[in-house]
Image: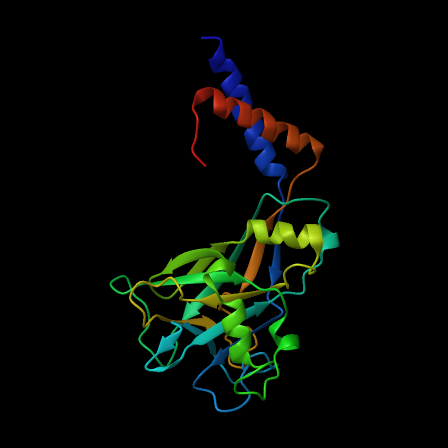
Length: 245
């Protein structure tokens, strides 16, 4: 009987906290792809006014050829944040990939987002087909199961999201000393193989203006008052029930 009024007060405090937590959107700076189907210029799509409408991500091998990897680079400034953030979500619009069958509800693709230790545009010699410094060496060393940050089921055309909270907090804490401000995308965990997803290329010259351009949405930690409200809300939640992580 005595606990009900406290819960009501905490509920109001939680609402106040949500109102003070600001959301910042950081749009992709450059997005591009690599592919075993390319015979030269092994990273494409990053150029201004690009003729490439989509950047594709496929299974590691597709149709007997080394697969395709999409990359998303951000002009991220850690100093814009005073401390750890509450949540960060990477979102991008999928599009008709123009080469392989697109995912749908009957044939979804498991697409994983990978943290990277270096910037592909700086690390890769785009003229090399293989060997040290090539796109292939970079892909094989960076796009691994151990570098997966999160995985999302893509089952059609639309906007899909991946949780990158821990990675963005790493960026804020250590800058780019551990991980580049760039994501790689793969279908390493797709159970059937043959996955292929196209992402809207932000620099495509034919964009109509209605496309959802890749971005990170960051919910920042509010001021000290907001932190107190979060702490009280958490205590109340634990009083009601224990939640699994």
